Image (cartoon, rainbow, N blue to C red):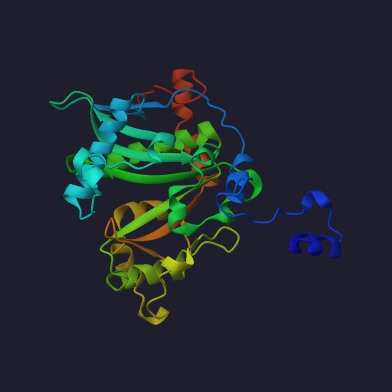
Length: 318
C-alpha cells in the first residue's frame, strides 16, 4: 500500500483528498506538475491587446516574422551586447530561441518613427499556466522549484527574455510595456506573475550586498516562496544584517529588478548561476491584486473616453 494512502487512512481523510504519488518523467501518467497545470482555468480573452504611444505600438506578435524579429533583438542584446554564450545553432541563426518560444505569447514594442518600418525595439516573453502544460513545464523550473505558486489552480504567468534596444531604453518605454502587461493580466485573469531576474556576472560575491538585501527585505512568505533547485542552490544571505546599507544595495540592483520591487515583488529562496548567460538569477514573484487595481484606476478615464470595455486600441499618450 502506498505511503500516501496509509497516512490518509490513518488520518481518516476522504479518498478524494488523497494526493497521488509522484511519478518520474516517462511514466504512463502525466508528471504531477503537468496535472497541476491542467487544473488551471481556461483564459477568457476580452479583446486584442493593442496600445499606442506616439510613434510606438505595443501588442502581441502575430506572425512568425514578428517572432523572429523579437528573437533577433534578443540575440543582439543578450549575445552581442552582453556576454551570453550562444549554442552553435543560436549563433548560426543569429536568433535567441529555445523550445519554449512556440508556446509563448511575445509582447513586442514596434517603432513606426524610424528609418526601418515596424522595427521591433522591445520584447517580453509571456507563458501562461494553461499553455505551459503543453510545454511540460515553465522555463523557470530549470532553476527554481515553484510548486507553491501552482497550488489552487489559479492562473499564473511567467515573464522572461525581457529586453529593449539600446536606443530606446528609457523609463517611458518600460512603463509602456508594463501598461500592456497590466492589460494582458486583466485579459487572462492572472493572479501571480513570476520569473527570473538577473545580475550581470556569474560571481555571487560581486553581488553580495544586493543579494543579502533582497534576502533580508523582500523574501517571499513561505506559502508562496520559490526555492532554487538543490544542485544549483546559492545562498543569498552572504553578508550579516549589520553590513547591509539599504540605499547602496538598492542602487546596486538591476533596473528591471528595481521596477519589479516597485510593483511589490517578492524574492525566492536562493540564487542560481546561469553559465550560459553569465548571470546570477533570482526568482521574482508578483501578486497582481494591487497591480490590477492600479490598472483599473489608471485606465478608467480611457475606458470612459473611448466607450470601450477595455483599453484595446486606445492611444495612451507618452
